[in-house]
Length: 379
Image (cartoon, rainbow, N blue to C red; front, side, top):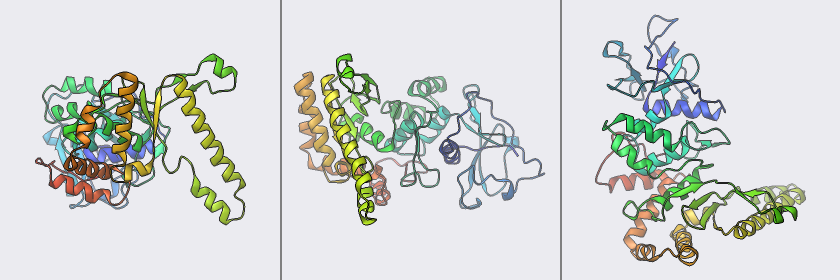
């Protein structure tokens, strides 16, 4: 069997592939003709459910998105939603995931999803594709995340691909959303914080400027000689300033492990691990300060509490005002508008990994003057 899936189906397949820690092939191909061999026709039985992240066979109400090179090669089965390859795509826009499954290259996939996702969710997809994590194929919002894997593309590669696409449908939207994306994100919530810092005020963001993620900075030899680490890596930095953020979430200091160990009567090891991590965080902040970098910690409560991220972002703006001479007046003005604050918090909540996010996403969509073709309200 050989089949090329597209859009949401391709994104699920790519997430399954990356979550298995498999390396995406560098070689790209033209779109192949579909082939059900060794069967003579397409049936549900030939569909690779696991590779597509499906727990049940597709049907007419939940078909698989497929793409074919010509109208003559259309797949007529009711469990397929079939599209013909658009004319004049850049050469070699597809990549093979093994012998039987083909997907659009990550750059084309990013373009395809511009018509499916809201701008913020689409930008977060860019962080994922250009970063070292993958969301769950079956539950991208609250499912398990795979970390420490290779990016499958970069902002520069996506930008070059979109340039080669000209004024194709969705390319203008994709280019605009790509402006909010940065390479090298290590985790989904890190990407959310970076996106909110980067988004302009009229898109419910904080408009702090361009960001860089996970850039390694060397410690001075004198400090290394005294036992400090050779380098530190802030999660997020505001380009052209001395200010940035580290996301220290609930798993960062695993207090739940201490509670569980206490319940079992042996908390010593868990307490030691948490204490060592806490002390390392203090040393990290000191060493970064010695490099002239003001890195503000962001916690999960800052994201979930009403107005919590407003406080952190204003503190960052005030630090930039103090250390970089960059005025914080625009953020003071923005945070003084209650209606804007309500929309901004609703956006933040819609992007976070909790069940309530879908409700906030739907409410935001209802208040948006445009509608996307197939918005799922999830990342």
